[in-house]
Every structure is written in structure tokens, then in C-alpha cells.
Amino acid sequence: MTERPKKVTAATVVRTERPTPHLIRLVLGGEELAGLPVGAYTDHYVKLLFPPAGVVYPYPTDLATIKREFPAEQWPRLRAYTVRAWDATAGELTIDVVHHGDEGLAGPWAARLSPGDRVFFTGPGGAYAPDPAADWHLLAGDESALPAISAALERLPAGARALVFVEIDDPADELPLASPGEVELRWLHRAGRPVGDALVEAVRALDFPSGRVHAFVHGEAGFVKELRRLLRVERGVPREALSISGYWRRGLDDEGWRSTKPAWNAQVEADESTALPA
Image (cartoon, rainbow, N blue to C red):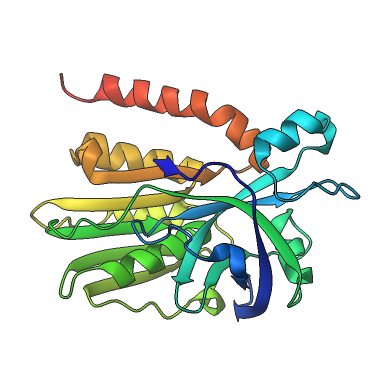
């Protein structure tokens, strides 16, 4: 995975939109976005900075400077968000933020933003784009993966086959997804079930097409773990043909998940190695 040096970039809110009841779309602009290195991947992400109340950092700056010059209790909280779109001609960066009322950090913040407000972030990073040589593509995720899935579908070669599963709360959260590929899209409505249950059920029931798959599976860590085992162990998908990661984990805030994720990943890989044939 590549990531731009952790320089802090300042952007200005150009406009905000509400494509669905639980989604806030931020369109950011400003001179500092010129030349932003977005385009190699469809899962490009930036990390938004959230300083504690009343704390103002010098600018320009970077994370290393902030951590060196400010006590730990004044360091910013970070939240990673996928770049939904980058219009280099207009100099506009689009980020989609899931919003569930007063829940969480980024959702309520995004709901308060107005044109002219300043937003600070590091990045972008990224690692995945659909392999044009693959025979077919599998894309599966929850709301947190929807921006990357949308960007990936737009990047597919004309006629490329893609089977897509997206789990959301209810039909009101569906979005039109455009693609030059041959896409079979299935929206899975949670309807009160635990996150990931419907998604795992649907992918497990899939009659896998023949040929080489390139898969993208991201979202809540619990279902990601189940689908990783399904793909790697039961279906024999090679590691290099799979982009898979837990963006978040039930019961943990982002800081808690990031602090435990390395150990969690190591355990998943150990279990997988034991289950795979020698």
C-alpha cells in the first residue's frame, strides 16, 4: 500500500449534498489540491483530522510536527475516508461520509459543514484497482466500502463482468452505480439483522463463475473475516487476487480498531495458514 507523506493538506468545502438519508457527500476544493496524486487506484483514501476542541495547529504542518510540538492529549483524531471522485480539471475532491444522526465523530461533523469551511487531511493512499486481465470481478462490502466499489465499477473495462453485493440499512440508501462493465448488482437490506449477515449469506450462496477472479471485499471486520476464509480457504482464491480488509469493527471506535488491527490480522492469517493445504 502506498501513502503520500503525512503532510497536512488544507481544503475548502465547496458544497455538501445528501444523496441518501444516511450519506453526506463533501465536495472539497482549493489551491492546495492542485496536483493531488489521485488516479492510480480506485480505493484512494485520505485521513481527515479532528483536533480536540479549542486546539489550533500551525499551518502548513505535518503530523510529525504536531506530535512533536503538542502534548498527546492535543493530537488530532484521524478518520480514513475513500476518495469517491477526483475532478482534476475543476480541482474538486469528493468524499462520502456515512451519517447516523449524532452517532460517531465524522458523521455529525460532516452534517455541520457549510461552504467555505476548512477541512484538513493527510494522504492520499491506496492499493487497489480492478485488474483488466481478470475474467470476472467480485466486489462486496457495506456502506463504508460503497465509495470504493462505486469508483471500481466506473474503472472496469467495457464488457468486464462484475458481481457486486452491497449491504445497506434499507432501500432508501441505494444509489445509482454506473459502469462500462457488465454488472450484476445486488443490494442487500439489513432490515435489523446484524451487520454482514446478509452479505456473507449472499456471497456464500454465489455460484462462482469459471475463470480468474479479482475480488474486493471491505467493511466491518467480522464479516470480512468470514468472507476471507470463504474466498482463500474454501474457494482457493490466491492472495494476490484479493483486496480484503476490515475498515471498522463493531464495538470499537476507530482508535480502538487501529490499535488492535495488527494483532487481529496476524491471527486471521495464522488461522488461514493452518486451514490451507500445504
